[in-house]
Length: 483
Ligand SMILES: NC(=O)c1ccc[n+]([C@@H]2O[C@H](COP(=O)([O-])OP(=O)(O)OC[C@H]3O[C@@H](n4cnc5c(N)ncnc54)[C@H](OP(=O)(O)O)[C@@H]3O)[C@@H](O)[C@H]2O)c1
Image (cartoon, rainbow, N blue to C red):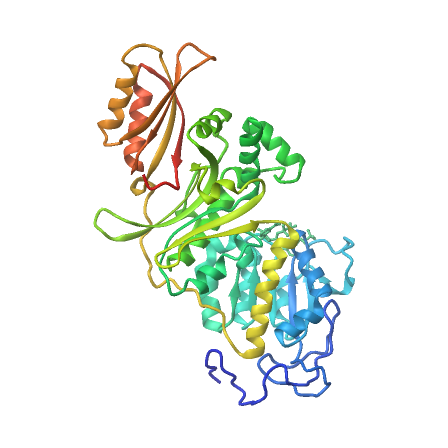
């Protein structure tokens, strides 16, 4: 039978919440007897006032999964009331069955694929991470009409199209609020609250590790290596911090945000990316002197190309941000996402971007939505890639720049350097010169007005060839200004 979106297809006239039926399993316990199909009423009449219980498969019981299971167990009654049906965990997929996890061992399995295939599983919560076998398991679940809730940004940044197609084909929900910025609601506002607006810009601090490191450098004047060591000691950085400090994690999130904001499928490989390993304490001090701080930004922007056509730019890099910009005050491991939309204007979403409980909060929000849809025969928002805008290359992007260089301390150097900028139409806004105590010469720091990235790159290449320039030590963008 073809269901109409948001309508019941069973001809039943009772309202969910008024039904009294046979759901009996409690969250955290197995209830192997469940046999009814989702979408069917089971009016067996036990007087609970709730619909038939919905079966949940939890894939992964690590940092996030442990909290998902805890909340499902602790808040079972409230969740059942909000959904209109009890949620019952049918099983939990893990790798190591021997680990004590404080749950009934009979719930644990290493076979995620078999778990999601069970007839009594209606919703799959994927918090095990990785690409395979996760992708295959999620596709199988969607193909079988099961709703999928995931926190897996790496997978979504590569395979959103394939997963969204499977979800559309099977009329099954695919939710992923937790994949970007942990607890912070940002996917749903972009997908739903702003569905009638035109988003122009999404600029986020979406990686807590790098924000912790850059904040420590700004506060204590630490070098990058010292701040990284402290982040590792406090558990904010992993033993191998590459994915965070080189911007890969932020790039995956930028791809997801850009895809939703601009109705265009953007993959992680489309995102221009630079990490924070080259940011020095001297850069942080210079930024302060310009009333700025340095943040790793994930920027998704609708830009207009030379032919007047719209394009999507998605980029991740450390950038100077004016202290008066709302993103400048987001410190430590916190995340924030700043949005500019044509009619809504400026919005900012702020909170904990990672961690077990905050991320599980977002997962549970999605799970409740997916479960409600099962109860009410509804559907979540569908993936929308109708705009299909071309992706802009970094060279086309116009922004402002900060260029720091070591130069010889002799007359005429400044005009020689300035000439390289002006000959490529890169207009200089401010110049600061400092005596360089480490070597004979001076440190020159230049801020530019807006210019295309390609022109700035050509300028830097030319500067590096000048006899009077010992080295260009740092090139950063300056974001968040209209000048
Ligand atoms: N941690 C965060 O703050 C955070 C924030 C936002 C999004 N996320 C995303 O959430 C997901 C989970 O992250 P996490 O930090 O919770 O990871 P985690 O602590 O490493 O936990 C992963 C869990 O999945 C299980 N697992 C892994 N591969 C499996 C397989 N092939 N079959 C069965 N079980 C498997 C592991 O089993 P064992 O326990 O037996 O090893 C473990 O329980 C990732 O996609 C991550 O990007 C995490």
